[in-house]
Length: 243
Image (tube, rainbow, N blue to C red):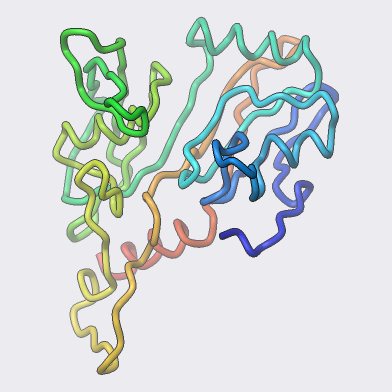
């Protein structure tokens, strides 16, 4: 699938002797995928080729772009892992959702369980694991909304399923009820050439890990920001242009 060869150094947004922060492109796996031949590129493989002791501090879904912290030595890894465990790391995601929503610090506190095959999750009030996300509207457009998502816990697909519960599924997230957005949805006088199929403005789940805040080994707290990748940036620009 990934015909494009990634150059690891191109992804780096910050590096010191302990950590590398990268802006993960969409459609690149964080860890090696569970395919028999393990083909394809993963961030962990690229990182280990760059620094032998590299370990991912956390992970992002394959389709999700954005900031990812990598530890360069065991001490740095433990230091970050403890902060994740004690929920001292602040993660901010940006999502474009279907519908117009006015979220001001709304908290969704709904427990989550993996579904049978482990690829999906569902809300499970009886046996689910505690999951909490806080949502803020950044910008409402004509029929979509740019939402800031702050996951307090770190469950799989947590943001996606919690937004579905708010009737604000993420654009193009068919798994959790999200619909694609086309230019014809936002632009009034949109004429598509005949015999041409219109493609969605973004062809993946419209979720981006925007920033990560944690404390470095010297005790300094830092916020690391990952600029929007091209596809997410184009989507937001078009929505703003025709809002």
